Length: 209
Image (cartoon, rainbow, N blue to C red; front, side, top):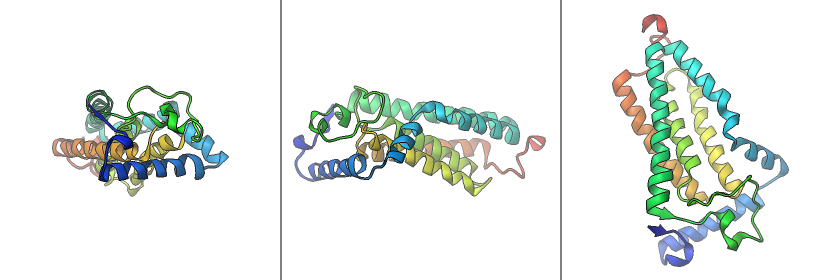
């Protein structure tokens, strides 16, 4: 297993990690305000997004019938695959990085706003991986219905940014998690479109299914 720590890696990786620490201190300590403290803590709560997931299920099944149920299955599969790769393969077997909220070097300076600090590896961010995987899948499969689905990419970005803001991840963790999740979401969306085709509201209403 690779131990990701700036002091243990000379050369380019050392510089990248030093830059990562610098950016973390800016996001977590300097670019803050009481309003963002409340917003980003709230955004991290999974319960907040239950209405959004319900809306997705209703929207998809009402407009696309059987293809909508297949889409829902693929979305769930996207989340499962991204979590398995990020949380179990990478964190458990490939890379370990101490989270900033568990790192004694930050004890006197960082702002920790989350309810608890997990003991698991900080790299990669599973929040970022999972949400970008779902966001890219949603956007790639539904973008032909309305351009407003591009907002799910901003949704994934803000949730990922929140992980750094509250002190549970470094920027590099969420960046790599976001890239990995995006690749997973794009791949699954390609498989879905090969099987179900491109979804259009005008041609895939249940009446035409």
